[in-house]
Amino acid sequence: MSRTEASLRPQKGTLVKRHKLSTRLWHWASAAIIVVMLMSGLMIFNAHPRLYWGIDGANTDPAWLEIGASIGATGEKGYFRLGQTELTTTGVLGLSAGPRDSIAKRAFPQWATLPGEEDLAKARRWHLSFAWLLATGTLLFGIWSIANGHVRRDLLPHKSELRPGHICGQIKQHASFHLPQGLEARSYNTLQKLVYLGVSGLLIPALILSGLTMSPWINAVVPWLVDVFGGRQSARSIHFIAAFLIVLFVIVHLVMVVVAGPVNEIRSMITGWFRLPEERRK
Image 1 (spheres, rainbow, N blue to C red):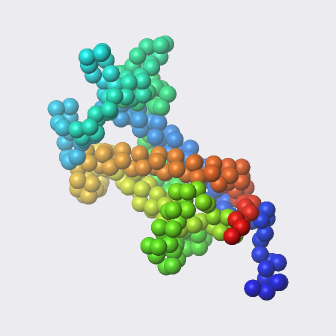
Image 2: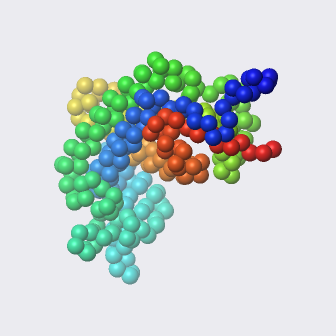
Image 3: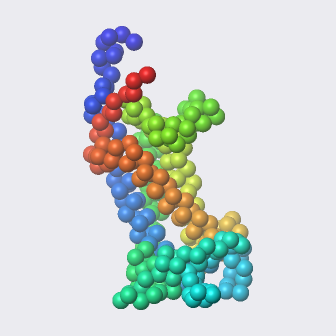
C-alpha cells in the first residue's frame, strides 16, 4: 500500500458512516414492538402455562413444558417443569408477588406482563395489534434492504468467511471478548452477519408464521399452514421457542454492546456515525 493510500484510510478515532437511516429506524421500532409483543405474549401464556406437541392439548394431556404452583411438604411453591426435570422457582415463576403485597399464582410475574393485571382479552389486543406491525415492518424492511444493497453489501458473508476455521476463530474471539478493532470494526464480522441473517430471515418469520397458525381466521384462509407446523399446539410451542431465542439474542446483543463500548455503539445506531476504535498492537 502506498503512502497516499494509507493516508486516505480512516484512522483510529475517525467517525465513519456505519448504519443507514432505514436500518436505524427499523432497529429501534422493532425493539419497541418486540418488547410489547413479548410482555403481552407472557400474559397470554399465563392463561394456559403449558406447551404441547401435535394437534390437541389440554390440562389432562402430557405437556413438554409447564409453569405453575403446587403444594409441597413445606407449603406452596412455584415450579418450572421441562419434560421430567422440575425446578423450584418460587418468587420468580409460578408463584410470585402480586398486587398489594399478595401472592399470585401465575406463570410469569406481574411486572413482566402487559397488562400487569390478569386480562387475557386486553393482552390479545396488544399482541395482535403489534404482531401486524412486526409482520408488515419485517416484510417492508426486508424488501428495502435487498433493493438498496444492504443485504448483499453488509450481511451476506463472503465465501472465505464461511470456512470452518474462520468461523471457529471468530467464536473464540467473541467468547474471550476479543472484538474487532480499527477498520475491522467498521463492518459486521462473520458471526454478526450469520446471526443477523438468521434472526431476520429465519427466526422472526418463524415467529410470525407460527403465530398466524394459531389464528382461526388464518386457518380458514390458509388451512395448509397448520399442517406445515404439525398442528396448532406444535405451532404454539414453536412460537414460544422462537420468542425465547429472540430474548436470548437480545441479551447477548446487549452484553456485546456493553463490551464493545455502549456510547459508541448506541451513537452509531442513533446517528449512523461510528468512531473507529484503536487497533491492538501486534
